[in-house]
Image (cartoon, rainbow, N blue to C red):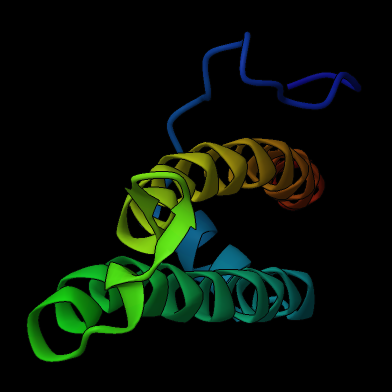
Length: 113
C-alpha cells in the first residue's frame, strides 16, 4: 500500500473479509458511522418535512393562498424555496461527504498497514 493515503482518485485495493471485519470492529469506524448518522438523520428529517409541507399545506389549508407580492402567492415562494433547499442541501452534503471519504480512507490505510 505504501505511505500515501487513499483518495477518490486512486483505486481502492481489494480487502479480505477479515480486513473488512477488523475495520468494522474498530473504534474509529464506529465513530465515523456515528458522525454520519448524526449528520444524515437530521438532514433527512428536515428535507422530508420541508418537501411534504407544500402538498399538505396546499391541499388541506389556505395558508399559502395569501398574496406575497402582487399576484404571487406564498405557495409559489414555498415551491421556489424547495429548489433552493435542495441545491443547498446537496452542496452541504457534497462537502461533508468529502470529509467522510477522507476519514474512511485514513481508517482503511491504517488497518491495511
